[in-house]
Image (cartoon, rainbow, N blue to C red):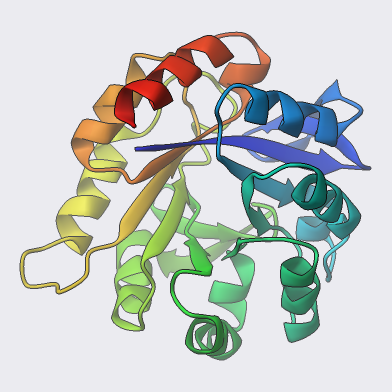
Length: 248
């Protein structure tokens, strides 16, 4: 299972929120590049970079930070937040993103998101399926949609999506453990034997201890995104480094 630390950006700074609430913002570092280099120094290969300013606005905002991290580290970056138009996607990839995550756009403009899947390929486009009470949430989690989570994922699976990041918003930033039951349900419904290609589910939200990681791997998660547990010292970089070495 891939270990994917998260860097969330507001005003150019590395922050974390609780349950997606911008009023709960905690600044952990003024320099996201410094954080990214620290991850890389401990054997991390992947990074989940979120433009929270972009998620609230109508366009990509913090692409310069993406460019900085992409040019000064070898991290494989998936980038999300504020990707609303073809021009945003172009900027993200030109700035060094290996993959992009589309959440709101996948709900609000399905035709455009499907076009991106066709044009860039399913290895480049990740479906951001973030949920509250098994309903998909959008716009930096500031809005609920009427989309039921599992049918939403299944619909995009039929259109070629492979990578899916799912965050249970109720768990995000709370350090109370991930949504094991929700991920089990998703994998049971989306990776049935009749499917030629199953989804690659990336768990996100609520990770609080190192012991949860092998459990997520056992469930069948392809990756897990870890944020506040790293910044709060609940999971050490040494533990993650040893896990990665043990799995190589």
